[in-house]
Every structure is written in C-alpha cells, then in structure tokens.
View 1 (cartoon, one colour):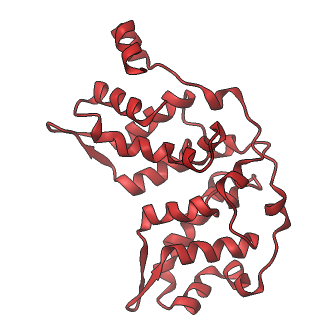
View 2 (tube, one colour):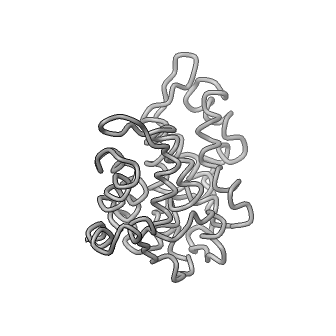
View 3 (cartoon, one colour):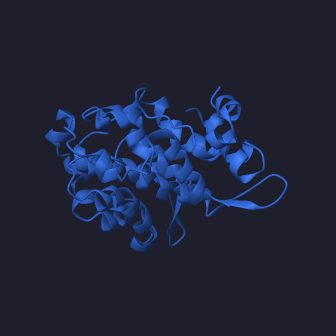
Length: 237
C-alpha cells in the first residue's frame, strides 16, 4: 500500500488532511527505494521502526483544522494495513541466513578500538565527551536488544541505509560536548566498519531473509469495510 493511501485512511479515521500524516507513512516505506522487494519491510515495519519514528516525529501529529493524533497510533495502523499487525524485529529475523560478506567480519585495525570501547574511541577520534556520544552508540546497538538471539541484528542499523537513518533521528551533526561537533555519519561509519570491515547495503543485510506470505499482506481496514464497499475501494485505488 502506498504512503498516500495510508495517509488517506488516517484522515478518514482521525480527521485533518492526508498531508498531516503522509511523512510518517513515507518514513516506513522509504526502504523500498533501496531494496525493491517486500523484504524491505523488515527494516522498519516492526517495533524498532516504531521506536525510530517516535524519535523522528515526536509523540503527536497536529491535524489540519485542529486536534492531534498520537504518532504511535498512526505507526501501528500503517503496519496493520501492510502486514496485519506489528511484527517484532526478532520475528522478522527468525531463520535469516547471513550474507557471506557479513559472516567474514574482516577486521580493520584502524577501527578495532570502535569495537572494543566505542565511546572512548569516539572521544579519541573527534573529541567531546562519552556522555554526548552514548545515545548515538546505543541507537546503533538497539536491534541487538530487540532481537538478542539473531546473528543478523548487529547489521540492521549498521548498514548504508541505517547510517543515513541515524541522521533523521540525530541530525547531520552531533553536539559532542566540550564545544566539539561531529558528523553523525562519521560515527555510524566507524561503528559499522569496526563490526564488519565494510559498510553493507540494506539489500545485502536483508537478502538472507526467508520470504513468508505475510510479508506481502495488504489489508483493507475493517472500519472502511463497515463504511461500505465504495469507501473501501476508493481508499485503495
């Protein structure tokens, strides 16, 4: 389902204009621009994606004409419309095969310190304080918290797309403390190179997923069905 259709459905439910929530729906579907099959949904159509969306858009979205809608509600509705429910990241990654490039884990000595002690390495490389870098480093580690048993979890944000996504959350430049500023992309690249010895594409990361039928599910929301066949058909045109 395209972001425009998601946004029209949201306007039917919550009021306002479809433009009010379009950015949220585009956020979830942006991964298709870098991996053009339904496995792209594994990146953001999950609990991790909702967490990141809340970081980007905040807790509420203002509606045209007054009022707000909870960002969490819009996120949940998007995922239900696409795959029937919010699927945990750990479930998306069940049984995933790891691409040989990620299995090899080539070590680059210049980045080893970012694997051993990333906060200290950031301060040594760019200055500032460990406290300033801690949220960004923890952000790249978050998939391993949500899917602790998946060998693919470390790569879910440590890839070319994930590094760019970090800029959506933290901005292009991080206030590193002590009057220093650091490119968020530089930190993401260092953390990724330290783990894999290269920066993989999102397609490389997700290529080993076992495709399941629910990856492709499109669901007409029940409230539109109840409103009548014409309304549901129009919404999905």
